[in-house]
Amino acid sequence: MSISRAERLLNVLDLKQIEENLYLGENEPENGARIFGGQVLAQASMAAYRTVVDLDMHSTHAYFLRPGDSSKQVLYEVERIRDGRSFTTRRVVAIQSGQAIFNMDISFQAAETGLEHSLPMPNVPLPSELQDDRDVAKRLGGAAADARLSPMAKLERPFELRSVFELGTPAWAEARAWNPVWVRFLAPVAEAEGPSQPISRCLLAYASDMGLVSTGYLPHQNEVDRSQLQMASLDHSLWIHRPVPMDQWLLFHKRTSSAQGARAMVHADFFASDGQLIASATQEGLLRTKE
Image 1 (cartoon, rainbow, N blue to C red):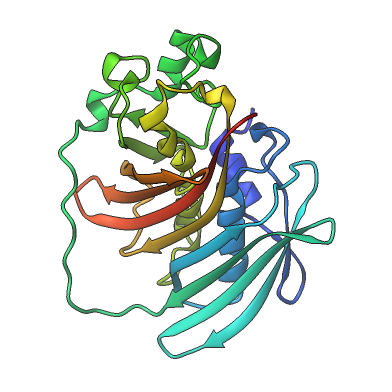
Image 2: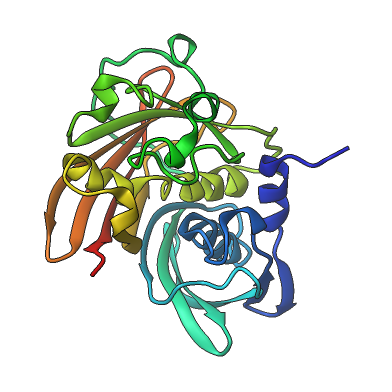
């Protein structure tokens, strides 16, 4: 029986410990020669989780320094910056061929109660009213048929995606600044007993890098072909506000606020199906026109 892309991602998150604070990660082969940034975010988060007990990641701040080579394993070195009663801090560096390709600061928190409020979820169609992006992209013919489509649109992914602006429709083709997409992980997630949920939160870190840079392209998708752009994640921040219901549909609401100097700024929120705000992300990405 073939293993699904989602199950392979769970295997990729199962890092091998080679020494105290040192972990080795395999790569997903499906994303081509370069490692997908979300994979490195997720693996770095998991490496940090291996150094804490009964705590949960609530914020991360990362820089993508060099392109990752998917043919080589990634070494994750964890620095134990601080262990506090409420908050604990780790720094993780991802290394290939002796060079840092990525670094991230991660803050963990013990469970606490306090005041609560939440931004309301946008009024968008439910996933049951939308079509699977991959199915739609295959019917359309993918990027070969429409240059505005992602080259990844027809590929199997760990997450099912259902875009509010259906691929190929007139609404999807319009220049716009926002891109709400429902996402759902396509394999069961079994957390170990305890108050923390490392797998779910690391999977959310992976998902938080899906399509952010390309959202910065949307206001310009009728000005320049996607193939004429060089796009890459530069820096990335993620805040997790509430427990992550990884067994549910999550609304991934992405929007871009600026593009200048070959960089685009994108913000995103994750909402649970009951409308609660689960997490927020912000990323600046490279959006460079090729010469």
